[in-house]
Length: 398
Image (tube, helix red, strand yellow):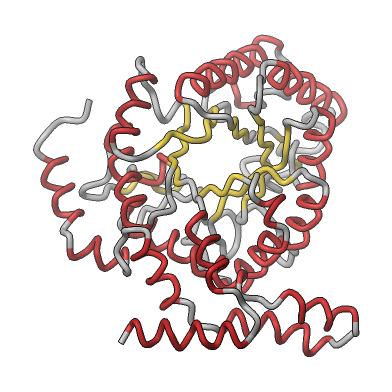
């Protein structure tokens, strides 16, 4: 039955001018990085909620991330967060990850939780605090080189809560001066991705509040500095796909933190609230495959209600689906409709692709990659969570 559905879909797509073989090739090359922090116990600002079987150590996080990769075929790397992830032997951590069929990816410094950072890290008025934050970044660069990563992903909670609390221009100059010191340490193809967030934890102003400020900083730094777009870090109504298109065209889109939100930075499952928006974002990425190939596709979620690994599999599947739908848009017809000012036809090209059931295609691609046709079903039937609960409750985390 699934083969019949696949053949019917292929016939439909070919009739619409879609080259199925090319779509399958691009789907197989898709790469999505999952974050180490998604596999451990997390919660809200009010407290941590425990989950049976959640990863307690860096090695257990690697085990879970490697499992997600084996089941989906496209989650080949895991991001690490220095502060939340600690080791005296990063080379050993790298080797363990590789033994699990996984590579370590972007390195994320933590300069927002220490008491010294109460009034900012790189924007602090105290040289001592700025120096501490710099040393944290330098440590991350050293770890990058040990584990073979080329991506330093940075986010800052710097900002103010009250008018007059800080001088905007002086804070900007401190921030840029520190970032320049970090940037000067980069070598080869190493890249720094500058993330933005329009509010929280600072509620009067945030030092890197939007993509324009992140772009300004990255442009001041140089070619190896780019902007990181977190889907949850925007005000309501912001056209994220437009931001993506502009940054791609400028060669400054460095990466994503995929998640979803209803109100603010909720870290909800990708595609759970507005799947059409996710599809439109992927349409911009798929339209410029050469430029988008250099983009780091990363998930940033900390779920405390859904089972950790199941949720991540669900997220990856949603990203695969959004990408597949973006790939089957007939670009020739879309362009013709755009140039002919045929608004209805142009929109319908997108809507038709979005409404297409691409699951038979994704199942075929997964099978050809040696993965289960339904990763979530395979996870549940394989009893992986039960095994993790048993193994992790019978020994003490180190």
